[in-house]
Length: 377
Image (cartoon, rainbow, N blue to C red; front, side, top):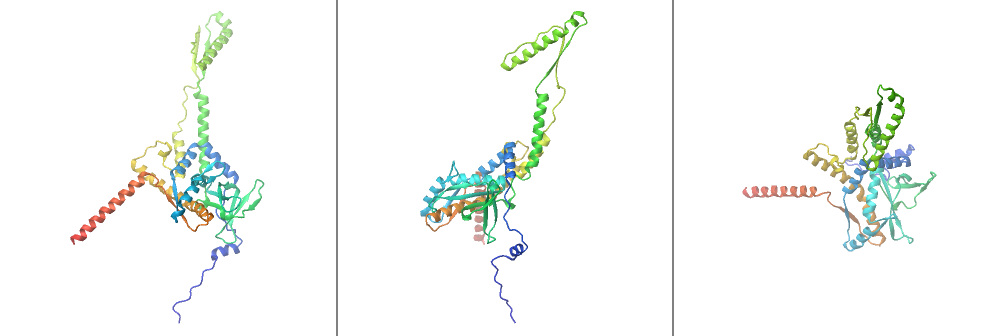
């Protein structure tokens, strides 16, 4: 009788993927956005400044980094390459590439880049931030290997012959950070449009000048001429104010001047606008005080919001780290060396350093008390 059965060797392809292929299901990575969706998010950032400001804040708060080579002798060459590598037409350094890459990642949910080689095909000529709306990502022969196709303006696709040079990353599920915001922003923009129209109607003060002729027959006879003269002088006085000249309006007779719409009040839009902004900021996961919104908050709440933002930034750093390491490893391979790279991120802010130092102090004090108790025993 056998007490231990021989374990079966796992297959190269998981059974779940095999079943999906047998059922003619396409195995693909999170789908990239369509060109019309990309244009929608670009227009959204232009139309709603707080959305663009929040994304730029996230990019800047993600912080800087340093790429460390396992071989110290190659560190100087690696630093020189990362600081001076061309990025597109007008950029330089791997930090510029990482900022553009994260910007696309936050806005569209996915980001793509390319490591371009020179004419010899042995040295890295530069880095390129690609248009994610023109790239389709699927699985190749191996379900764990990506296959990239580029779409041209006519909709034709061309398979990229060197997928190992492509740098790709996506948020969880490939969903853009801005998804769901356009519906809220459309309501917000309608409110702002109505505010502008109301100020055009009631905010731009207009006057009603009424001339009431007396019961004298002479006034009735020349009422039309006097009304035309009053209108002319009133218009001349109002036009002179545009050029800094002040003219008094002098008239004889019973003349009544009123402001049109002075008794009407504009609608209070603070409540609906704040509700919409709260939804937008909750989606972007950034504290309101970083965007200049002076909402009522406590010191404890601000500290918790800062901790939540720190965890969000750590998540974005985890997405960028493999991309940056791949760039560094590609350069090491191009110079014929056998080493690997790692990324060391800067601390997000001084608050993290002080909290870490305080935690280490408390642990040291607790350890000291434990040692004293052990000596007493």
